[in-house]
Amino acid sequence: MRTDSSPGTLPAREHLPAGDAGTPVLDVVIPVYNEEKDLQPCVRRLHEHLTRTFPYAFRITIADNASTDTTPLVAARLEAELPEVTNFRLEQKGRGRALRTVWSASEAPILAYMDVDLSTDLNALLPLVAPLISGHSDLAIGSRLARASRVVRGPKREFISRAYNLILRGSLQARFSDAQCGFKAIRRDVAQVLLPLVEDTGWFFDTEMLVLAERAGLRIHEVPVDWVDDPDSTVHIVKTATDDLKGVWRVGKALATGSLPLDRLTRPFGDDPRDRDLTNVPKGLARQLVGFCVVGGLSTLFYLLLYSVFRQFSGSQIANALALLVSAVANTAANRRLTFGVRGRGGAVRHQAQGLVVFGIGLALTSGSLAALNAASDHPAHSTELAVLIAANLAATVLRFLLFRAWVFPDRGESGTGSTVVASHPLSSPTYSTSTTPPHGTTAPYAPLPQRPVPYQQPYPTATQVRAGEAADGSWRDATMRLQPVRPHDTDPGDPR
Image (cartoon, rainbow, N blue to C red):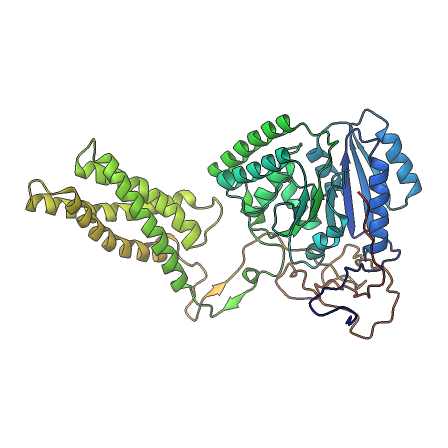
């Protein structure tokens, strides 16, 4: 513990020392197109930073997507001079295509990429990949829009960036803050399943990957970054913005129609309690009641609004039937996902059919109430009709919840002695270990995560156990990644911009 700083003052940031190692843990991809001027200083600066600060073996991959200048020659020269640098040539343009190709072929467990201009401060690289190495997160992104970020750029790019992210939040319900920052990482086991679902091959590749990952329930870690705009950027803003909007429409349509098989990604790749066999687990009645009440309240407001609209051009019975039908379909879909936690398209048609039966019961209650009201009064007031419908809907709501819980969305794992939560996910999270002995039941070669040698004798425990996942058969074996702590001894004066 440092004691040479005054009270209330944080000590200076210090880097972790690093040495040589073998097979890479991290593969940093730099997609380039006609970057003969910036490629060499970028790669050398990144290589020097990783050599000095990154505690594991790494590789830098130059992904040249159809450059027409001397970029291939520069990349080949860097590959020959620096052993941790490789060069990959594609004959078609597209940043997304380059990333998909290189990431799919890489054997490194952590895959990252950054733009060639290195606008993002490299001090954020280790915080970016650390949650992925530990197994805490599935993807990690740098964010220029986080409160702790420091950004230097012109007002036009600032406006475009914020407007684009507002569009993503409004149209695709995205919760991540910055889709376009060229500073991202992903676990290889996640990429193998996620990348085949991403269609875009250009600049929208990042956004589509993040939206699908978020919708599937994967964990996205955000890192505030220091970012300085490159005034010589060759990105065509208008064309890129147009392509991005087309991509937003395409992805939004696919999500709305349910054509994307996101059920392949519904399980977070980590220590998820849903992947264990748990006995005597409460059914979550209180949680389901809260969710059902919230959905029911919103559905009732939606129903009353529809009834008031339909009542303008039809009788009370027809308006009631139409409003109840539309709201019942929306109510079943919302309860299916939010109250009872059913994901994917499997059984959706059957659930809606059963929901319509429940709708018929509700229709009988509300229609009977309206019939009784009309029999008692020739011309009842509109407010009286709404009051009668609210009372009838309350009775129908109680019955609807019981039918949903017992018939439409029953718990299939229920037994006489208690409930059992059993995972039905076809995927299992790969595990990593520093042991050279393969896990039980594994026949393929089992390589440990290579580590750089530690230059100091540690007076504290030399390994930190980090849970990385569960074995495929459900048992908990040695699925840990040993992170070797090291003492800081080298400070980084910062790279001049």
